[in-house]
Image (tube, rainbow, N blue to C red; front, side, top):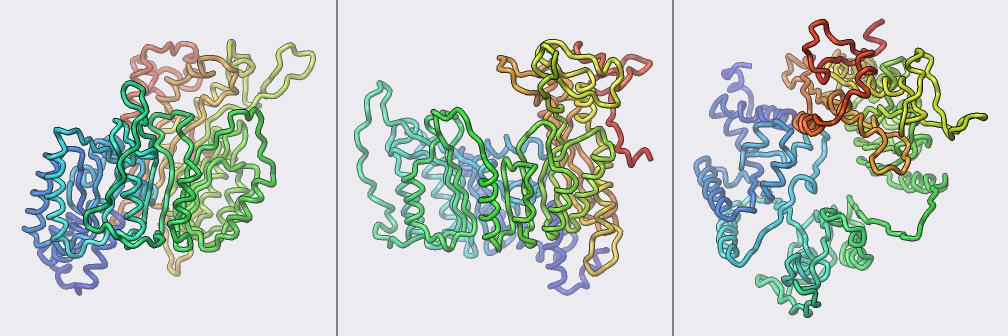
Length: 597
């Protein structure tokens, strides 16, 4: 649409267009704002909706505050800021290095999405992306106070500010921080929740044990009582009316004896929080039974889980970890569910079948965001049927798909075999494929390695074929009051797992570890996104996701011997006549059966 035609549209319609652009493709809001002065006035509210500051460097924070203040002043945009995010730039950059979004990674105080993962998975993941660890040494405390003071002055000018999101490392369970200094984080948060911040709606706390001993191992004396916030030492203590509460442990050091979330902590929050107001509750607590040597989860356990889910009639978002794929989950879910992250137990040879996926689609037709794992089988009819079953989710817009390339299970060998286990022979195996592997991979066969390599190999062509197969079924099932040839699926992420998941033998080196160079070269992750332009919705863009990590993994394995499986690799992908191509790039995915018939 030309600029002149945009100028003729009513202001309300322009605002709706701008909001749609911001929701579907955030970077385009900048282009929209540059179209004309009128478009800029409409887009300004979205461009400056959220401002973000990194607080790990006090001098840089002070400069950022000055720059941001000048930008807001120049654009008369103080009244357009609704959300303030405070985070640590080091953690943000480390997590986002593979998300190549110029607008999200380089713009410091424009209308940023809080997390690039929200664009991919449709949800916010603040715990993994925005975590600040403030360094408050004696020589830097003054600089930090001055920097925060300048930020406080800016906040006073943000008359429309509605949300302040601060992601800090919480470092207190025994009254001391990691350097043996008195810590009052727990007291401060408790005061904020119980009256000092009456509008507080969301809290995420990840507890980290302090240092109850000094450098010489002597117990530290009891800390002095906290005197409270200077602004209001007499804040009323009323139960917090939070909407979201998450309690967990900091897993940085992974000390088994320090990963137990204390029962008193959970009890304290239960007493001080109006639980009836909660819409989201997450408690991450490690269970520690040191004497346990055998565990069996009986059917009754899963029945209890399903009964609990049936009681949550308002549930719209659900994540389940380690669900038994042989047990139906669909009957426990309500049709209004919009988001489902389903992680099943990894059992060799098992996975969600076509009937299970179809049952989920029929039971939860409104799902828009879905993450699950399905088993590959060399692109045969069984595998294609799984992709077609995914197409039965008629309103699915975002899909995170994990492809299981693990080997089949072994089983006790039939007498009079000397060895204890054996493996099946696939009908497609020839004499070479049927022969056993030596060493720790026995009784697996050469053909099983062949299948792992084929199932792991995912190139752009295969990723697009999966996308097309799902969309073809979706287009037939989609009903939205209008006739359309474009499927609702807008974004799909594909990754591969399981190539080294052989039965454990108790060896120091994991079984199948020498397959790592091949799995790193073949198991590529792809992100497919539909073009946001209305006149190009049939165009799907594909790019390799997490490429930097793959290249690092491949480079770290250059010295590893790859000769053992190269004959199997070359039986699948014969060397080109020139012989100059590196085997790491001299391959292609096997096509789906629908692509060859």
